Length: 295
Image (cartoon, rainbow, N blue to C red; front, top):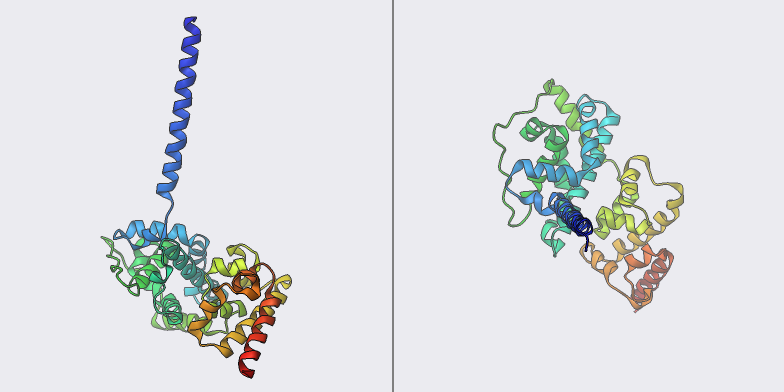
């Protein structure tokens, strides 16, 4: 065989080997770099901050953009900040849940947990996390630090070295106004889909699946409202939620809607709703509760 043919074949083999090595190396690097909920439970505050920023995504960016105006007393920015903070809570909890085989391990406290975490929106901007890590990442890490105090077996997040307090040019009255504005926003009647999510114990991804949309769309509904083409389904879901709340104890509802049932063709109520059969679910629940009352 001519020498140039042998050399050409050898070069091709080496190039193929190099490309395969590079492909697997890049895949490994992507796997290593992708943040998971487990990264939020580590001891290094900087790594926790990077993970929280990646998992929080646009919510962290929205906090970064809205917090200065919210602190300055601009009501629209307060509303945007609170909406972003609530979204951040959902994303952090989703991330933790996806990193555990048993998501209940990272769901302490039930409904009161979210209420506690939401109130941290008032305190977070004045923590040294914000002073050290910046508005977006600092707020996200302050939230993670508060959440870790609620998780069974989780270690408190160690403070970073050379930490700095935040620098705000505010007097006491301005801080009090910010607290009041955030609290008022938190206490405003929540959107109907948020009540649905709370009673059925849905995360943001599960709620989006019920409507056949991406999670980002549901995130936007909290700020801009539910689009007209989804209102009919939302109304039916509201009736289902009202019926379950009236007939069952709150702690039983999440299990009931997740249990497969012959009435829904072997699906759960949530799966049937996601398939567009919410009217079937409502009718079957009414019949079941009417029969139970008659019996």
